[in-house]
Length: 156
Image (cartoon, rainbow, N blue to C red):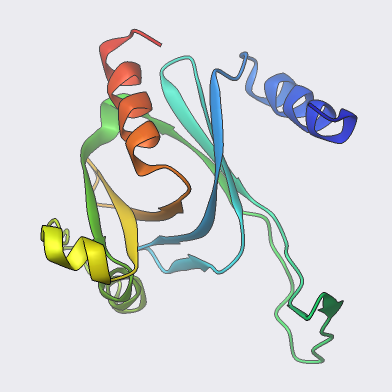
């Protein structure tokens, strides 16, 4: 682990008050409460919960930054999700998730069929007890699901 990465993890552990057990990145994130992040989200587990934090990513073209005059000011979004609040985790089409986010829909999407999962861009939908729907474009959905199950069973 490089020093910058180690420092980042150490800062988050100090902030959370717990050792981080598992971590990954989501390259896209959204919530049916009107939050849509087209850039990266750091996601980790600690104790019996998940923590997510987005970070600003400036748009680039061929590796060169693109400066936009009317770009929205970046405001960091972070939150803790308690594993006991997770009702379900499903793979859904990204295009359907985007529609739900924009419409602030309250009905969870159905699991995509096997053939759809092969040909469509997929994201992971996390349904919470309070009705919030979270969407993640994860590097490894299976690893995320296993981590959530272990958090809920108290075995992580």
